[in-house]
Image 1 (spheres, helix red, strand yellow):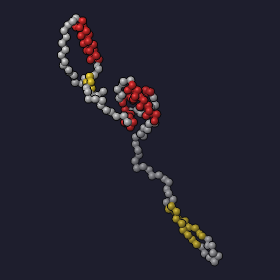
Image 2: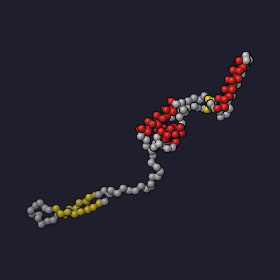
Image 3: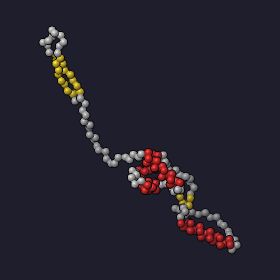
Image 4: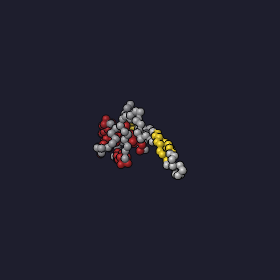
Length: 159
């Protein structure tokens, strides 16, 4: 905004007392009204975690490792929400993003396939050892024939 004003200057000379000198001054004023955004920012604001929240995520993660529980995002989120009812992260996706920002990454431990410890395998091993013990007590000849087999979907690629 530009304004223009006129002011009179009184002459300092005595001989010029009858003269009126008119000067113009121009001033610029800044408009303080902020322009509106062209479009509204939709959605909820991003969740900013404090250092205490980051420390709690690390603590619960390492607690799962100490208990020899495979740490997944679902298990970790369940632990965090049960420990703190007002924990700001409520979804697995958001927790995964914050864990990645903390420096945790997924890595395969090895490429060795490991059989699942399903109840059927445990029961089958118990029957096998019971039969072997009975045969050994009866002094029977035992022939071991090594034939390794694994059914589809009964193995894990990583632990």
